[in-house]
Length: 223
View 1 (cartoon, helix red, strand yellow):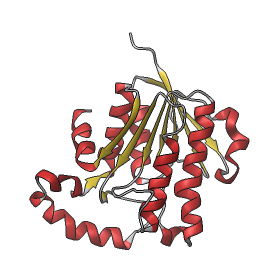
View 2: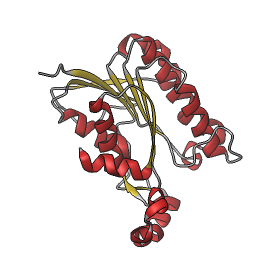
View 3: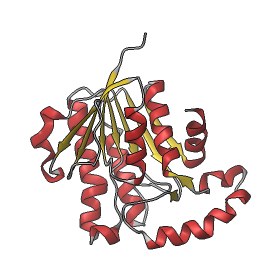
């Protein structure tokens, strides 16, 4: 019988994170799921341990950030963050600090939502930040690092993102035409990204893995 594991999730109130949390709570592989966030989620479950934290002082909570598998679904937009500096803090600093602290506590796997086009050398700020985040977590001592690069995300969010909602209306009807090399540009449901993350974690594969959107869709279908 496979030994049960503990999971830690950051960003469980978001589009991908909320689905990921549900999947983890319903997965017999995990006996405990620790959710860290700025506020308590309206959810009670015997396996769920909610911890309210200040991400600006993550190190303060290092003794509580102990798990086998870490799922990082943190992310914002420059518009919501209010500035490039605040965006960088959420999408780079919080993510990399979480990775560093959990690696130091011997977490085995780190699974993170990035973005299509992530590139530390990009001239575009968003892609550059995502690329720098990916680069720096790969240097940490996890047995497995899993990076997910979804295309346009579909699904209900807590907040309205006008640009993404407009893009979804335009791109979704065209998705059937995106075949072959274009498959990685197809819009993908946030739930499918969450399924792919849990799929990767339960297959327990070591090394660094980067999944484009089309591979994410394949993995989701296998869960």
